[in-house]
Structures are given as C-alpha cells and as structure tokens.
Amino acid sequence: MERQVLRQPTEAQVGLSEGLISERRGAGSDGGKEQCVLRYGPGGALGRSGGHGAGAAVRSVRGPGGAGGAAAARSSTVRMVSTSDLSSKLKKLTDRLSQQKEKVEVLERMSDSEEGVVMEGSKDPRVAEILEQNDIWRKKVMAEDPTFFDKIATVQTPEILWIGCSDSRVMANEILNMNPGDVFVHRNIANCVVHSDLNCLSVMEYAIKYLGVKRVVVCGHYGCGGVKAAMTDLKYGAIDNWLRHIRDVARMHTVELSKITDEDEKYRRLCELHAIEQAHNVCTSTIVQSAWDEGSKITVHAWIYDLSTGLLKDLGVGAAGPEAVNSLYRTPKSAG
Image 1: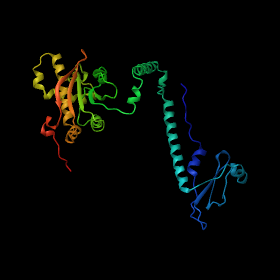
Image 2: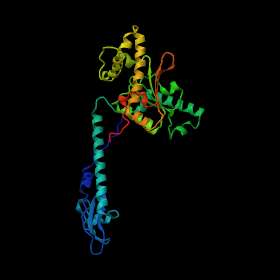
Image 3: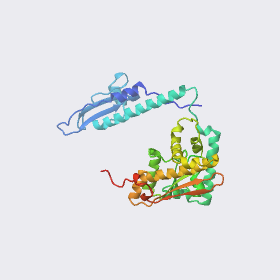
C-alpha cells in the first residue's frame, strides 16, 4: 500500500524558525512604535531591520550568497510587524515544526514495522458490508419517519438509565421497544455497580443530574457468562478481580443458595440476586443519595431478562427515596 510520508523540515526552515530575531528599540523622538521590518528575498532569504517610526530605513537585506542590493530589488513586499506579533508568530511556527517532526517520527516507526500496521478500512470487505447495513437501516428509518434524524440530532430526553450486561444479546432499546434517545445506557460485564467505578458513577451522575432521567434500571439476564464464571474455581485472568463483586453477592446469600440443589436453578437465582444487589448499590451511591436529598423523584429497579423467552421480569425492587436503604448509608448532612 502506498504511504504518504511527511518530510523532515529542511535546515533552511529550521534555521528560519530559530533565527527570527527582532531588534528591540524603544519609541523614538517622533513617537513611533517599536517595529521590525522583514524582507523576504528569493528562495525564502530573510532580511530584517529595526528603527523608529514608519520612515525607518531598511538596515540589511540578505539575498542569495549574501548579496544585498540585487536581492533587495527582487524581494517581495516589505511588511511591518510589532515585536510582540513577531514573537507570537515565531512560537506558532516553532510549535508547528515540532508537531511535524513528531508525525515524521511516527510514520517512520510505522514504515519500519514488518507487520504493516497501517490499513485502509475501506479495503476490508467486512467493513464495507457493515457500512452497507447501516445505510439500509438508515433508509428504512427515513422511509418510516423522514424527520427522525432531525429530531434526535440535537437533543436526547431519555426517561430511563439502563445499567445492563455487555452481552451482545441484551440490547436495551430492542428489548424495551424504544427508539434511540429514549434510553441512556451503561453496560459492563455482568451489570455490576461498583462504588469505585468512575465510569459507571459518571454515567449515573450525567443521566440523573443533567439528562433528568426518572428511573434507573439494573437489568441482569439468565445465562450471564460473568455470573457463571464467578460460580467456578477457575482462574481467568484480570477479569477475576471484576468477578469478585459477583462472588461477594454469593457470599452474602450463602444460606439461600446452599439450599438450592439444582445447579441450573442456583445459577438462575444468583443472576437474580446479583441484579438486586447492584440495584441496592445504585441506591447507596452518593449520586442517587444526593439526588434524593435535593428532592429528585427517582426510582431504582432491578429486572432480569430471559434470553430463551425474550421476557423481562421485575424482581420486586422499586426504591423511590432514601428511606429505602439502611441508615448506615445515609449522609444527608454536609461535612463542611
């Protein structure tokens, strides 16, 4: 594949960036402002002068080979600039040269790679197929509602914040039969709500405080791979740290789970208990606690989705205020 290569700045260009030095002169008796005269000759040759007032004479003009008068005759129009403007332009030029140098270094490293990491997506046939599917969907939507994209392009007003699993089979808008813009979605492995997870907390705060959602739904699903993995004694890697949150739920409900002898039934029940506990974590979060303290009407729900039937099930959790959680988690007074 043909690559575009950014060339290194020439020595002349670098010299230009480093050598733009103006002579500082104070205001003269005629009250003129401090000025510097730049004269560009053939091949980018640069001359400079300083003086007092608009009538200051050009002190030196450099042409090729140091020729002065001949170069001056062929040079371009003289431009008057203040020293402060010159310093600003010099800084911008230096920054641009530095950025160009970094780009050249990156391209050189990429060019040296034996694997050929540069790839044009348009030449990937699967990418072309996916983009074509997008166009088919777009045309279908516009045939049903020509103004659809105009309506959602500038604003979103979701009623629900959906915290669900990353499983590709559990799609909030599809399951709820809602349009884009109706559901604000956060997904992770096994729909965990962890108090130290800034990603999840940021989503919650934005949805509640700025989008004004009225319901937060934690939705688990039967057949969750994360829950299944947490029930084993196998070592998977980094994800084991995340699965500990599910194992904590299993520990808190050891008595109930130990009474279930059928492994499939125990698996299904842990999926339910996990969704309930994550809804509890939503309620005890500082985000929801603060919203309730400020009078926001937010309800928190725990649901579960059955992949085999397509049905949602309400697990009976519907917290609507701070009284729904243990006083241990309440912090209504400011420490300040």
